[in-house]
Image (cartoon, rainbow, N blue to C red):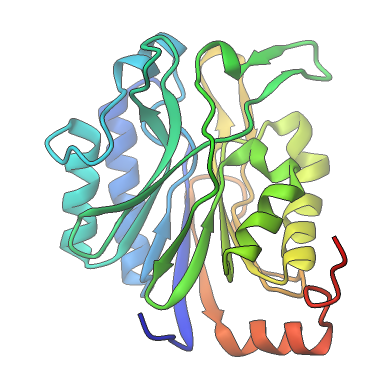
Length: 274
């Protein structure tokens, strides 16, 4: 595909709960708003369909590429209707271990077809400062491979939430040609308030890429709280657009000239020794 000079992107910030139908209606409202802002690519956050129980998420697991399956049918129709690329943050994908589906970012093209998918590599097993424990590996199978997809002439590197803490993944994505990195997330409030902006800006600076992050926000079932602050950062690490607290949409233009200027001015990617 030939190169294009700019790509209008948007991230939808949600506060997903138990009710899948209500969550999907919120997705549709967000995507419609993004489309009205001129977005050609729209990113949904991790767990957009449900922030409920792990058992409930397992019940939502689908075979990626099955456009008759409920979640993918809904998203496919939405992408096709608005003629945009829709990156479905993180959703349950069936795996050989029925109790542990993959956490997968599914990419729909302008015709509503699934053209790529990425399974979350790094799983969030931590004890948070407030004493709460999260053990993603107990309910989720890890992916194995980085994924870069061509979207309207831009190379887009896929990642999900906890991946953000592993810079070696983003080196692999840059080596594969990534120019825009996407980070759908359900970043916790406890860690997000201190680390979210720092990590996203660091990935932009060291990768000399645009970074688009879509986050969950607010209180969720089980007492979980997410930080929000979906944003777009440029290859210099400057946050050029950011969502405030609450449900909403953040948008902006990804410009190739700005990326090339940054990589020319400070050619650190060419100076790598390892």
